[in-house]
Amino acid sequence: MKYIESISNDVYFNLALEEYVFQNLTDDAYFMLWENDSSIVLGKHQNVFEEINIKEAEKTGIKIARRNSGGGTVFHDRGNLNYSFIKNYDKHSFIDYDSFLTPVIAALNSLGIKAEKRRTCDIAIDGKKISGSAQSSKGGRILHHGTLLFDADLSLLEKMLKPTEGKIESRSIKSVRSTVTNIKEHLNEEITLSTFKNNLLNALFPQGIQKISLTDEQLQDVRNLAKSKYSDWKWNFGNSPDFSYEKQSVLLNEPVTVKLQIKKGIIFACTIEGNILPCGDIENAVIGYRYSCGEITDRLKEINSLNINNIENLADCFF
Image (cartoon, rainbow, N blue to C red):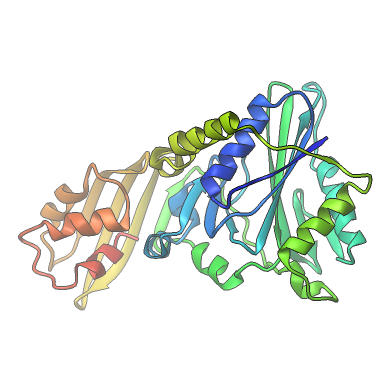
């Protein structure tokens, strides 16, 4: 097994790096450690609009990314350490999570962290989640990756992963909400994430592991993949399963109901109910556009018949 440490803290680059190693470096098994700046990462089959607080995410400008594996939505920041195992496997045999989780849990235990497996693919301390993981397999290769909450901003995590208001109906894979904690809170000594990362690597591979770096040409391929796929709106938002949305609000002391049909992240149908609104004009203005706070706000501002000073309050009725 060889070790690759990412040179970037960009979520799009790191997801592309994982895929590049998974698809192209098939000569050996690989282990990776990487950190991302503040970002939200969804499972491949999830509905981004159902999983995160879209309004807050757009306000903060936090990056939203979709990975190649299944599972639920997770929050990343510089207090979160991500790990990846990439190796061959027998396509005719069953691959469970234990073969990957067991060494990680053992390594954590050796560092004085009372971690244990919880559910199928989580790691917890005293019942509180510190790690979730997911897998993807193709062509006799398997990718297992997971998070390790070390000193993450849990208040921002809770804020960003708060579901959007309103009623959503879809066939997407739903995240399982869990009580979380940081590893740092359960240590007997004050250490940095960098020290924790080195300690974890040494605990996982006490005999040492060969560290390799990608060539400039390979890194450029990774950057190209990050740009063409992982930072692309269609991949991150447009791949959300089709869904319907309904929300009842109060605007200028009058009830307002918004009903939407969303396909590939685009508003396909819209029904507005409200006595104080030019409902038909609003419906025509937003149909065919991205289901985005910024996009809808811009479209509402262009409606001449809309006599409302605070357009943002009307836009909130859509989320």
